[in-house]
Amino acid sequence: MNSLALLGIAAGMTAFATGLGAVPVFLLGKAAGRLRPFLWGATVGLMSVAAAVGLLLPALDEGEPGAVGAGLIVGVAFLLASRRLLEGRDVHVGRLRGAGVRRAVLVFGVLLVHSLPEGFAIGTAFASDTEGLALFVILAIALQNVPEGTSVAIPMESAGFGRGQQFWAAVVTSAPQPVGAIAAYLAVEVVEGLLPFSFGFAAGAMVALVVFELVPQAFARGGRVAGLGGALFGAALMLALAAGLGVEG
Image (cartoon, rainbow, N blue to C red):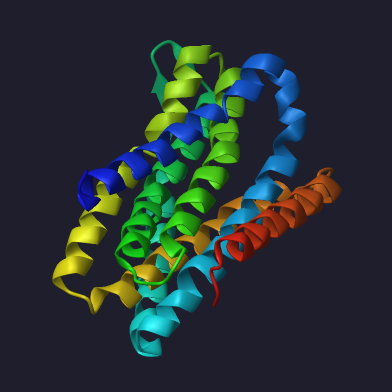
């Protein structure tokens, strides 16, 4: 099996992992909403460490700070522009409509948009010579995709969507990951200088998502303790994973 096929399979598995996040909602129904602050917090911890240890520090090792900084700025701008386009829209899906449907579509849209730079992260890490980095980034993104899938399913369940719709909607939010992974891998193979910029871009999009979307959800009134616990758990898990795989900044 060649490297490109292996990369496609690995990135496809990270996308499928998102669907697993809908399972707790199947089992708990509306009660799963009580887990949301912890799950959002865990995603904050997972993504923050993944952005720093798995993206920014390796990027600085492999390229000039200017290129990394430019990628970081473009990544933040990309996420903010995408977020702005998705806000303030009155939407309906079939016969389902209302605020619950809008929230479900907004969460779906934001996660769909930000999964592309996550795919870039997978592809650029796969192209890197840093030992253990590709496996770290793939596992990190797969792990943080699970609570993201739960975050997709919770508002969908509240809005009246069925279990199958929740599962596949969660998977589809990460569908751009294999596409982004392959595109980034091919681009980096052709132009090695793109690697630091691509890492910076993916890290910038992740950081912007954490700051503007995940932190407010995780530390909303009434869920701050659970959100903090989730953030500490997610960060500790990613740091342990990085140490176990020998990934060093």
